[in-house]
Structure formats: structure tokens, C-alpha cells
Length: 268
Image (cartoon, rainbow, N blue to C red; front, top):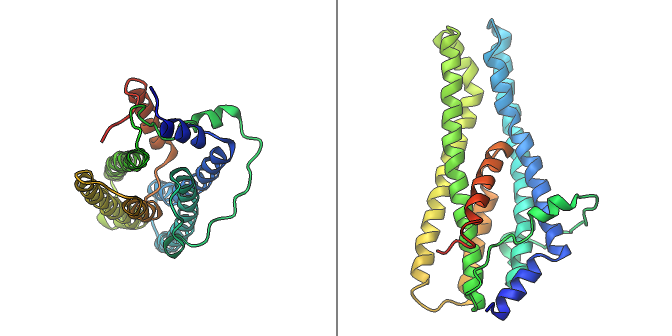
């Protein structure tokens, strides 16, 4: 039999206002993803230029500057999305808002004209085990789901970036580019790839550290203060996350949901 807290959590996360928050954060994340793919697309264009000149080198440098600006814009949108996700979580968990870390609560606009099919995919955002009756236990499980999701997604993104880099490198060699030409082509892409790889590794390490601390926390009775501190850590990770292209995200989401159809909830 489902506990009272399970029912309250399930109903609350599926109400109209909460679904609207998820739609908003997804919209902002989607914008950040789209603009963050521009540097990679321009890198691919550079590779197929037949001849190289002084202007190509200038273009490569200008492109690197543009990429830096795009990254800053993307990070700002990511932080906005993370703040909205924080509002969703704290509303669901009934945790106090951290003004010092997050800032003021964001102004929320109600999004209309969204298909019911899209809203349906956001239902039951957290898969809560029916046997969990303690409120703090449910909250911790939801936080762990966030960690598990992001950790696996970052691993898939890391592999995808490496494969992308290898494929582009093979194409460059196949086209018989000189070492100088390859460096000119790869300078913008290389800066992006190295930045993303180090960022993913840093986040992956942070997530592993948090998982270890949570496992230690489970050995004793934990409080709302402990859960608030975990939530702070999650917010910082979300603000610094590397954007995952929609194609990779959809592949992972499909695989995740395929598993979740067989396993009602992931236990940690």
C-alpha cells in the first residue's frame, strides 16, 4: 500500500504549475544546447574548405572569439534553467530557498500552446518507490536519481565528444591536409573539445564525491539540513554542466525509459 508521502509527492510533481516549471527549464536548456552546437558546426565547415590562406587563419581566430562569447551566453541560459529546476525541487521537497547561493526566486511565466504529448513526457519526473514512506527518504531518492541521470549522461557525452574528434581527425588526414592546416582547422574545435572534456571530468568527479558522501549519510539519521546541503551541491553541478546535444539526450532518454519500464524505480 502506498504511503501518504508517496501520494502527496506524486500528485504535487504532476500538477499544472510544476509541469509548467519543467517546460520552462527544458525550453531554456534547449536554447543553450542549440547555440552551444554552433562552434562544432563551424569547425566542420572549416574542415571542408579546399584551400587555406591568411584569411582562413583570421577566420579561425575570429571564430574562436565568437565561440567564447557563445559559451558565456550558453552558461547564462544554463544557470537560468538550473534556477527553475531548483524552484521545482524545493517546491516539491518543501526545502527552504537558498538566497545566498541561488539568488532570488525567478519570475515564472506560464507557457501555453504546448502539446499534451510534451506535457505527458514530463509527468512523474521523479520515479518514487511505492514502499518509501519516510519523506526524507523520498527526497534523498529523488536527489540520487538526479545524480545517476547526470552522471550517466555526462559519460555518454564524454564518449561522443571523443568519437566526434576522432572522426573529424580521420577526415582531415583522408583529405591530405598538412600539419599546419590541421592545426588551423582544429584550433577552434580543439579548444572547445578540451574545455568540454575537462568540464565533464570535473563534474563527474564532483558527482562521485557527492555519491560517496550520500552513502555515508545513509548510515545515520539525516535531516532536512543535510538534504538542503545536497541540494546546494546539485545546483552548483547543474550550473556548470556541459550541454548535451538533443540527439545524444534523446538516445539516453530512450534507453533510460526502456529500463524504467521494467524497473519501476532505481534504488540507490
